[in-house]
Image 1 (cartoon, rainbow, N blue to C red):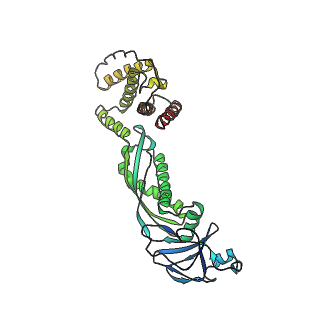
Image 2: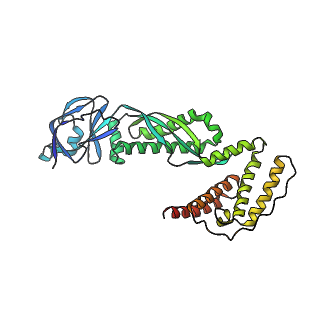
Image 3: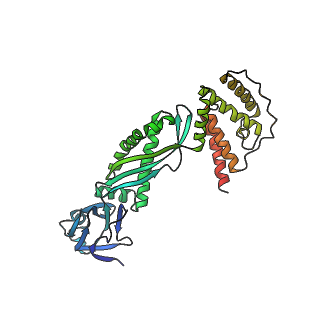
Length: 346
């Protein structure tokens, strides 16, 4: 049964909530003459039929036909001959939220000027404030159908992450340069995200990047690149990595190797020989002939999620080194990613 509210207020200061519905459950009826009590750093928005209508700022207000003109026009001058009238009421916090968290749920893959390809994780904080309560309720509650704070924060985080991903993709620099560009990146994300926030009645005050770090696989590649830097030939390092991966795959045969992905023993053995030659040139020593690879077991399809994941990681190395084309990579990666999901779903 609907309840008639003569006093509309929240008994607390909304704590960390951005918006709160009144009443929290079910519907409520309101009447001319009801009191609306709005605390500092709050705004009250009447909402009906998917639209944010009249807004009350801080203070004590008595509902009259004069101060809810939009609602009166929507329902009818005489409320269709009935009072009380039905509407939703949303309390919106207008204080500044200073420490909202964001982070990448999955690594961001980018082209890298040195490593060819890299995967990054990032996290930080952002600060924002509701600048236009009516627009905010229209866009977030009316369009997005969100009013729980956790859902709203998740939606805003997605905007931040999208803009960061776009900015990193446009950067065209190596991840080795990123530590010196954290402030510039944060400013760039803020500039890109501000219009999206403003379109929803929000003022994005700042975005802070606390960390942009490589995944474990990319970190290993950086460590190996640093070791090879003593030789002074990054190209030799990249070719060495590709050759090493393919040779090991050929020697291992099916499980975890590239044989199951369509790369045969001949290719692995040939790359093994090339590896030895390149390393000899890099160290300015005569090249040592590579021992012929042992004949592998008959190729077989990876049977465990770990084997498939190892294969996928190996494919990444081949793409990064230029050993396989983008088209081949996409085809093989899609095939084995589907196999991985199938194994994980068992």
